[in-house]
Length: 181
Image (tube, rainbow, N blue to C red; front, side):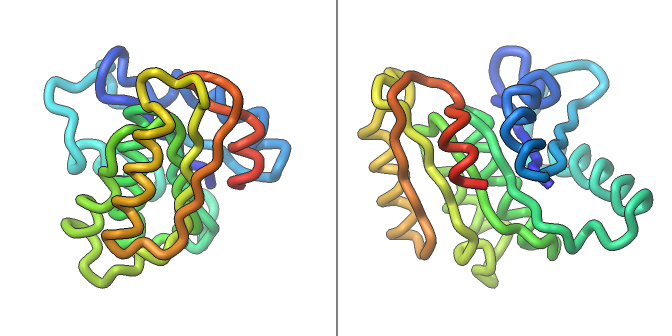
């Protein structure tokens, strides 16, 4: 399962950004999922609100496909969605899902380390592979930001952090997503 998160700003619609991930992920055999609240951007976007939506989706999927809680799952996003993927990844690890990776594209802040402290004191999450995807021409989440995020993750105990660059700006790279999956 590839679970896509969107940014908290703008329209904040994970479902609207999900199609950017589908071409690559579906060809590789992944199911792509995203969930939003009923009224668009919430007035107070926070981890419990997002987890409420995501856990409802995953519970429904598990009722339809018993045993799916054990399926491999990756939390993914770009920009603010990448920050959220770090938070959601920690919660997935805490709840016992088979989290096999976190994909963060265009990320300029390490939210995964903060989330690990809050949601996974057993540090299972810190053994999860994290893939950082950096556009060489990204002016929002610059290559220097990605280096800082990588160093922060490593210094906070994450053991499997990979940073890759692609020719481009603040966007999802199909090639980097393919390599990560």
